[in-house]
Image: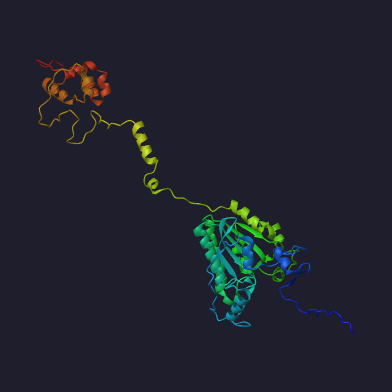
Length: 408
């Protein structure tokens, strides 16, 4: 009786491409399902693999809270650029491979219940290069955060500006920086998260302008490559140059955070970084202020300072023609002379009542001739003070004289 041996299945020579992943740091083969459970971080050496935009949003935001905006934006070919193949074909191939319209996605979401505006870049779409669409989405995210007054979070992963769009791509640097400057002036916080890699024009523009700059461990961060930098300065670069730990030691980054702690770190930062609020007072308070300094000072001056009377002209000082002292009758006036009833108060009472002695002096001089004490009367006419010092002569001047004139 023939013996039947068990049949063995032939060993596969090819495996599904998404089944295993080799760690570039420790070269260990990692099973993808196990790798996804640990947020694509190597359990042996801690190497952080690159994440897609969807995986990054699931890592940071609350489940189901993300609402994408402007998902229909797509790059065009304004320069008819052709390198190995035309630019539209390259964009179409990247869209088919990633399922994205371009290298950035932005919208609103929540982190532990707090509303935030977020923009996430995907390096798998043409190396995360920043063209017109990426710059427009970053700018719209900043403007939307300013309008809603919510924090802005941008996750960068890019190789720089997109060369297929030329100067239009370079102008996105100025546009994004201008939007973030308006955000800073209004007191709205901006948290920048730099992942591997963040280089070129993205690093030179919005990625390094956060109120708080966070980075993942061992992320490549810099403007130009290490080889270009070394050849430019003609010097050997220090170890770990352009890595997140090197930048943190030299003060360019605020924190280097492990991916498993990134969500909690951002949430704690949002408790402190609260958008500034500028509340205007009601219109009634603006129309009638509660305290008016000028009116208060004017009322206080009226109560404290005494009323100042107008100064009287000197008794015998120069007078303009046609003007008379109050209560007196000019020599050329045709008005009747006042009565010469003797006053009990003497010359002092006459001066106090505002009456002038000049008409009486003129009449007595014309009736009785030059009286005695002419020099004293002239001195009395120069000032009221000197008149008060000679009461006898003043009474003699003011009193009427009857009879014949006396001899001098």
